[in-house]
Length: 440
View (cartoon, rainbow, N blue to C red):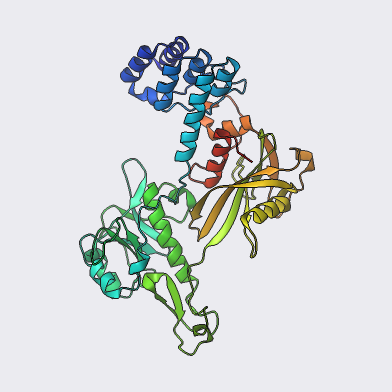
């Protein structure tokens, strides 16, 4: 049976509530689960057919097997919209519950899967650090010019190239900088080992060609697309080390007297090497890792049917994203959102709601994701765009945002916009808006 007839059979079974037939189709066609949302010529999916005809057991099964409730047909209707039109309230509740669950699962952003305990209480314990590094449970990541040593997996994802102390001992002996990243488990008192992770920066000592020494290794390019191919938990660990080593790179000298700095507490503090420097007086005698807070917000209309997106200069063709900007001293998150939106688009914001945050280790930003409701009606002719910041800004409908989130389901739409990849918090904010009506 070819793909067309398989999908048609799936739609017919969903329309008539034939759950056994759907289970048989999925069992006999293993790839069908990846195509469970394939639409007919009018954009209708199996979930929509089941929603129209009030087949609750089919709805439950399709959702459990990955059916996407956000998809819309050519009339701009989701499965929940269709269920509502036909007064199938239990179906509406089931789909809404699924959307909330998916939104919760989406709340963990890329670079935010924290797999390590930071072990801050161990950073001053030199004896423990030296002992732990030499255990068989210690794991090391090499960095060279902020590029970590990695390997490519069979599924094309990228992972940390995990090294042991014996692999990096010679680098450490030559003066490589070592920082403590953390432990995969909580450390009990007086206990050593437990999969402790360290970062090793060899930028200033050189390393030669490591491909003959460590089979299958390579340095991960600084280019962003490559960074986003990392396994999620590894991306968080790599990002942590990258930000710390970048901070070291740009703070090698004291800002007061110009003397060299040296790090303490396993790499998380810098102090001036000049004992007579003024920086040793008072509470500012230590420099801590820098984190730059950035607000990134999806501006929506008061009826929740439109969103405002911007195009940065240099964006790929048809790509749009949320507005964003650095916070300034003395600002709250709400104040920064309102200021940035007004500066870049001229839109006045009525209310702001925080959603989630994302570390962005390029070099060390913290993206603070928000939904902001405009005080004025969506009108592209009234936008006052800051052309130094944006190439363009424009209001888009929910349908346009939906098509951008799920491009492979809307191949028939030739002029659809492109959104940032799923690893970016902007993507998550837009998807959250579509899944759950903001309570603002």
